[in-house]
Amino acid sequence: MKNIVLLPFVVSVLLAAALNAATEDAENALRQSMDEVLAITEKSSGGAELAEELAPVLDRCVSFEAMTRRAVGPGWRQFTSAQQAEATRLFSKLIIRTYSAKFTPGQQPDTQYLKASSPGEGKVEIPTTVLYKGSRYAITYRLENLGKWLVTDILAEGVSLVANYRAQFDSLFKKGGAPAVVDSLKQSVSRSS
Amino acid sequence: MKSHWPLWACAALMCLAAGCTSNQKTQQAVTASSGKVTEKRGGGSVVAASTAKTDAADTEIKDEWEDEANVVISDPIEPVNRGTFWLNHQIYQFLLKPFAKTYKFLLPEFARRGINNAYENVRFPVRLVNHTLQAHLDRAALETGKFLVNTTAGAGGLMTPAEKIPALAGVPKTDTGQTLAKWGLGHGAYVVVPVIGPSSTRDVVGLAGDAALNPISWLSIVFGGAAWTLAVSTPAGARSLPEQMEQYDTVSKTALDRYLAVRTAYIQHRDAATKRDIRSKPQNGPSLP
Image 1 (tube, helix red, strand yellow):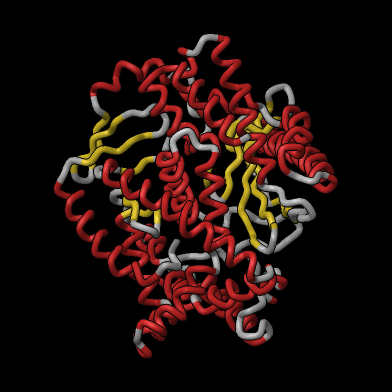
Image 2 (cartoon, chains in turn yellow, green; image 1 turned 180 degrees about the vertical axis):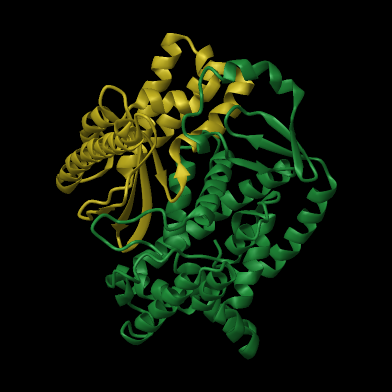
């Protein structure tokens, strides 16, 4: 009888411990990736070179496939495998270039990690504040356990990268389906180079 | 581009006009998740029947993170907004960007930061009143502390020593638009204001409120005259222009549809600013108020 009374307590303690372990793992993965990114930006002269240098690290710590799938939304199912692969390749290129362009050579951001939370199983949200070039920004990283912890979205000052592209992809998809999305991505990538 | 304060009165008039129109008409709200068109009548909302067909497919890819799918704003005057957006884009490219570049070239970073800090410090009544109106008395107290520290130890606000005091650092900024949001007012219609940029009917009213609470506006009223208005408003506008142009570029340069990118970013940013609360606590550090 005593054991039955204690059971809910034990289960809740175990659940809390499991969630803590998940957020800790995700945060360690993010910190490690950020350290790698900063080590590269510290030595880099910036520009297109930086994007190329950062690409391998970002490929390891970001799930561009999940990011692209979410950004496209329900229309993703109507993409062929080749279109999905092409959209992911182009979208990742676009994101890497945008991300790299935010770094100014010689200026290193000071990141403070805030209390992480887990909105669901295998998902962790890590808010940070970044002091960069005298201004403070709120950056939140969303990670998912896809075999390993990978970033699936970034929110800058509350603006989700995925949600921002979702609105645009939706509109394009409704007008011209998958080819319109891929063509538009191609144009955007060539504009950003 | 809130700092273009002389345009606020004009913007407020536009807001009132747009607000009246949007209340009378059936509004269309675009949901970013699936491009569903939602018809809003009065306070309620009805999902249009035409979207029912796609709903089954929609469930295949679930929105694991709620806000990816919830960026909603009514945009009943989209063609007009797109026109104003195009005009603003030209103004930014050919007028404000060169101006921002020149400003950045002429003034070293510490001087630009000092001017920006001083103007932000002067805007203290905007934050104090709005924190109070939102019943965030703790934040109002911290804002007062921040203002006193920066004004006295920071040479009239040119420097921000308060940022080095953990209890005062990172107090969330606020404005009248956020107060109206806290009081339960929705965005209303999306409005692109000439020169100022993206806004909503609620936030345009908010801009007028901010202008009324801003001591710089009071000085202009007291001293009057075009020269004074120009002398105060030019640096007020220029101070954050390089950063604002950079932000605009970040959102729009790699966008597939600039208008949609800016609209979605604006709404998300404003929603996040309104929802920001004590949830986040720095590790080994103080909690944000």
